[in-house]
Length: 100
Image 1: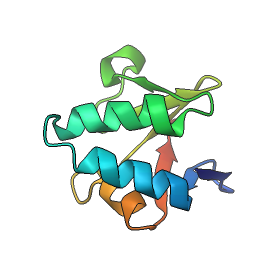
Image 2: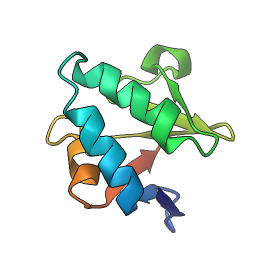
Image 3: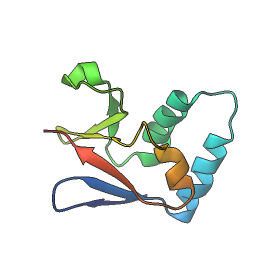
Image 4: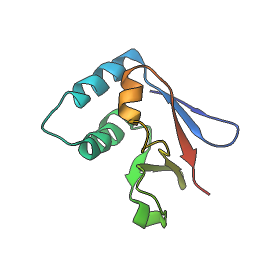
C-alpha cells in the first residue's frame, strides 16, 4: 500500500499489485459483510501502524469508517458514494480525510 500525506493532512492511498490481489480476494469472500471486510483490510492489509477506531471512541458524528495513527484520525468521507475497498481493488486512489 502506498500512502502519501497530502498538504492539507489528508491521506492518499493507492494499492500496489499485491494489495490489489488481496483486496479482490477479500471482496469475493461472500461469508463476510462489507464492514467485516473493511476491518480485515485495516488489520491485515493496511497495517503500517493504523488501527480502526469507532466514531463513538473519538466523538465523531459519522458512520464513516475511521482509522487512527499517531493520535490522528482519518475518515472515509466518500462512504455513502463508493466503497473504498472497491476503488482500491480497481487501482484507483482513495483519499482519507483528516479529522479536526
